[in-house]
Amino acid sequence: VLALRTSVAWDTACTLARRHLPDLIGLDVGIGQCELDPLGQKVILRGVSLFAPGADTPMVPADLAEVQLGLTSPFSGKLALDLVRVQRPRVSLDLSQPSSKPPREGPAPCVLAPLERLQISRLAPTGAQVRLVLPGGRRVEVADLDVGWKERWGVAEFDVEARRGVVGLGPDNGELVL
Image (cartoon, rainbow, N blue to C red; front, side):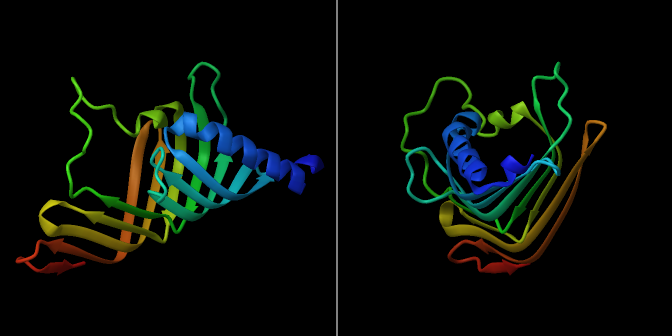
């Protein structure tokens, strides 16, 4: 247990996370520093960023992500996470232009499909910022967003609170302040 509380173990954990997380979640991953808490069954990642494959700008940078492992059922095929807490995630997406990729035949794959391998009991992003650029000059900006998600008996309960935000309705239609 004490060996897992050393900087050598933490650096090894970071290296393994950087190597294997992209295959697991389908996005490139940047991690500044890792910390392991074997008694609390936690992994703490500082300076975390998620990138679209091959992109230079992160889609979701966050100051800190804390993951607490849960009890995994060997028959479910899913990794159980009791708690995923993310501090100051910043999501910035430009959805104003259609994709330059040729259309696929059939439905497009869901970007959240890799999450099907996880069973998350509690999700708690705090201090989040979301910026979406939409077609026609429209935009959505939300700041100081806190989300609480608990799963009980297979049912998800959400609690969402945003302290600031604005919806841009287009160049001639003004803004709606939240």
